[in-house]
View 1: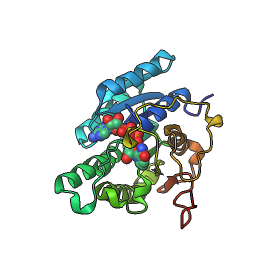
View 2: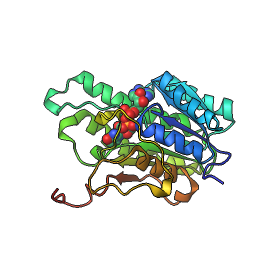
View 3: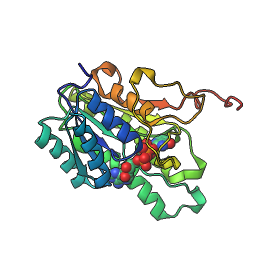
View 4: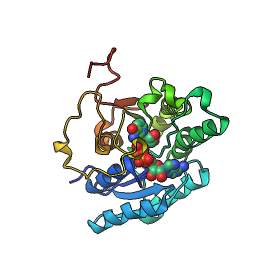
Amino acid sequence: MGMFEGKVALVTGGASGIGVAAALRFAEEGAAVVVADLNEAGAEAIAAAIRAKGGRARAIRCDVASAADNDAMVAAAKQDFGRLDAAFLNAGAYAQTGFEESGTATFDNMVAINLKGAWLGLQSVLPALERGGAAVVTASTSGVIGLNVAAAYSAAKHGVIGLVRSTSQSFAARGLRVNAICPGPVATAILGVAEQAPIQPADTLALPDYGGVLLPQHIAEVALFLASPRSGGINGQSHVVDAGYLASYPPMPE
Ligand code: NAD
C-alpha cells in the first residue's frame, strides 16, 4: 500500500522542478494527482506521464495569483476524483535583484506569485480538504534569512512562513494541518538547471554534500511526509531542507 492510496493530491508548479518530483511521487504512492501550473502544456505532460504508468492524474492551467484559478483547481480535484486530501502549494518565481535595483513592479510580482499565491491557495483548499488532510507550502531558506541579491523574493518568502504560522489554527480547527518547507538550493530551472533528475526509489536517495545543491526529489519526499498522517503531530511549522547550511555559523569551509 502506498502512502496515499485512495487519496487525492494537488500540486501547484507541477510542470517543473520540485513540483514534477512531487506529482510523480504522490502518484507512485497511490494518489490521484491534479497537476496545476501556469504552463498548461508542461502540466499536461506530467499528468500524461502519470497516466501512462497506470496512475490517475489531470492537468489544469492555474495562475496561483488568481483566486478564481485556485478555486477552479480545487473544483477540478473534486469533480474528477471526488475529494482532496493533500495540497502542495509549491508554485513560485524568483527575481535576482537587490533592494536598490528592484522596482515596484518586481516587488508586486514577487509578492503576487510567492505570497499572495500561497494565501489564495490556502483560502481555496481549507474548506475543501478532507478531515486529516494537509497543506504544504514551499517557502525558502531565503524566507528564514535575508537574501541580499533577491530582496523582493526573500521578503515574500518570509511572508510565506508567517502565513503558515498564522493560518495553522484555522487548519487545526477543521482537523487539518499546514506546514512550510524552506529549501536551500535545488537543481531546477530557478537555478538554471534544465534537465529534470529522474525519480529514484525514495530509500536510495543519496545524502547531499553539506550545503550542496539538492535534488527536487529531496524536497518532494519532505512534502509527502508533511502531507501524510505520518506527520500528524506537526502543524504551523517551517522546515529547512538545505543539507545543513543554515544550521550553524560560520559555514563549514569548502
Ligand atoms: P521551477 O522554475 O522549476 O518551477 C516553478 C514552477 O512554477 C514552473 O513550472 C512555473 O511555470 C510555475 N509557476 C510560476 N509562476 C506561476 C504562477 N503564477 N501560477 C502557477 N504556476 C506558476 O522552480 P522550482 O525550484 O521547482 O520552484 C518550486 C518552488 O521552490 C518555488 O516556490 C521556489 O520559490 C521554491 N524554491 C526553490 C529553490 C531552488 O533552489 N530551486 C530554493 C528555495 C525555494
